[in-house]
Length: 113
Length: 115
Image 1 (tube, rainbow over the protein chains, first blue to last red):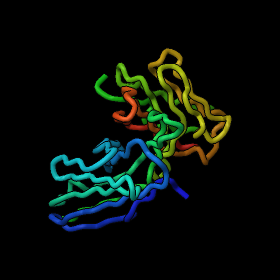
Image 2: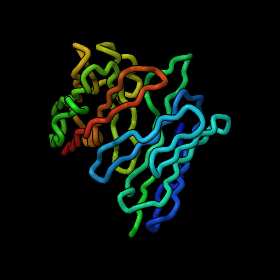
Image 3: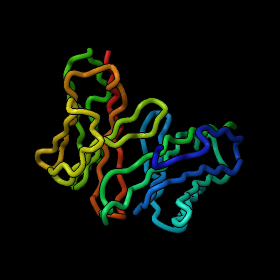
Image 4: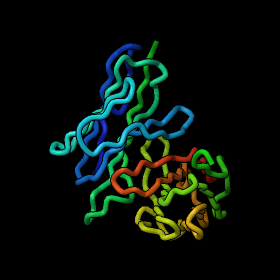
């Protein structure tokens, strides 16, 4: 079983719709990342969270540490938001907060005009 | 440089050949990570370095895979006796190494195809 599970795997929306992508994880973490992978393949870090909520433009990321769950929301979606969104966690192992990320499989979002 | 760079961007090789993939991290970044990404999947951890020290190589699939970062900057991932199942996108990322506040910056990747 993967330490990080994302849903849905694929998501199609009409321009302007509110989008939610979910991420659940099964291990203790020191941080959770949301990444965006462009159609050309490049990966960009959107958010890094260890608690609460962060907002950047039309993107909002929340995390509930007790429930081991995070959500990425996109308000007023636009075709340029079409990409793969990936959730990744850094485990808290033996007190270490550095090191490898564990990735979800990604959510392919397509926004139609 | 402005970002993480990787070379070559595309590599096609025949089964059994050795390949070396290069990563040039952001200047001053302490940590460097190697990942592999199969089509339709999320990235999979291979190994990472702090400075020149290899901290974790538990993700390397077998002993045909090795990585080095001899001077704590550029890193090379080497795959010996390549097999078709090694075909994937190989990504490098670097970070300042700030612990919990550590954002990783990803390179464009090297697309490896083993025929």
